[in-house]
Amino acid sequence: MAEAIQSLTNQRFRELLKSLSGISLPEGKVAMIEQRLRRRVVLARLPNTETYLQELMQGKLGQEEIKVVLDLLTTNTTSFFREAEHFDFLTDVALKEFLDRTANDRRKFKVWSAASSEGAEAFTAAMVLNEAAIRRKFEWAILGTDISRRMVQRANQAIYEAEQIKLIPRNLSSKYFMRGTAPEVATKVRVVPELRRRVKFRHMNLMDPTYPLDRDINVIFLRNVLIYFDADDKSAVVRRMQDHLAPGGYLITGHAESMVVRSEGLEHVQPTIFKKAL
Ligand SMILES: C[S@@+](CC[C@H](N)C(=O)[O-])C[C@H]1O[C@@H](n2cnc3c(N)ncnc32)[C@H](O)[C@@H]1O
Image (cartoon, rainbow, N blue to C red; front, side, top):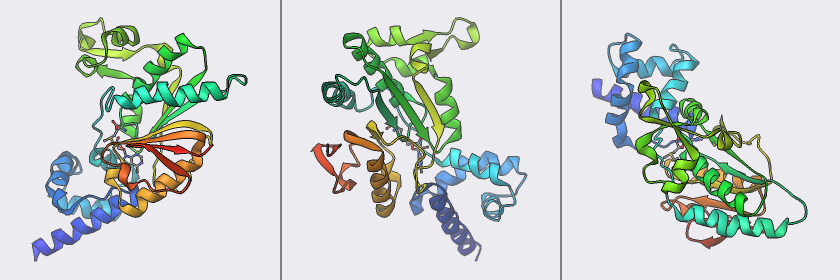
């Protein structure tokens, strides 16, 4: 009987998580939920995860607690230069085509990191664009968005462990990251203001029916997030993304995800990369 109640609560909780974030948590992930929420159960002074989930779903723990849970249950794994060939594509193809097309009207090159986590993807793009702008002058801006408010806050701070930038080519890491000098920040690095000025992060849920964003974005990174959504949500997100791409703009997905992108206005130009018609 107790087990039946537990599995019902888990089922309802997975529905709640899906309706809030689109994340389809496989049934087998119950142990992961328990582990990640253990501290919240203690802080709420409740006897077990089951009671905690029930009170959460009845709204007894408040809206703020739901935000905390979303933060805890999202997977935020990321790294600088992850799937590095995408950043070559960004400058060698997407940017080059844009500059050739807009040589006379000085438009800004816009990039959106659509599930930006703590910002490594957006700042990788920022480094390569800034380098490209030294060779051929142009304006650029990057927006990162994520459902996790904790990640958005961290990305805006742009502070990382020195360990995280080890795999960045040395000429870039020494130029774009400042080292902490005080003993308490000796293991940390921070992105230089020159890049931080052009890279902003804000909270946004990809499940929202509309996105309050520009509709002339040149490159959208939508990497390693579709995997968490079910088939209908994946298609709906891709459709909405398409509306925000400039003609000739590119949508870049993660390697595990490109098979799910099937949309009339998007041409599959390379594994993981899609182009909106001009
Ligand atoms: C695995 S990380 C990927 C980060 C980065 N794009 C990369 O490839 O390295 C997935 C991110 O998607 C975010 N996410 C999950 N569901 C989301 C949603 N419905 N709306 C916006 N972001 C979401 C998570 O918070 C997490 O930071």
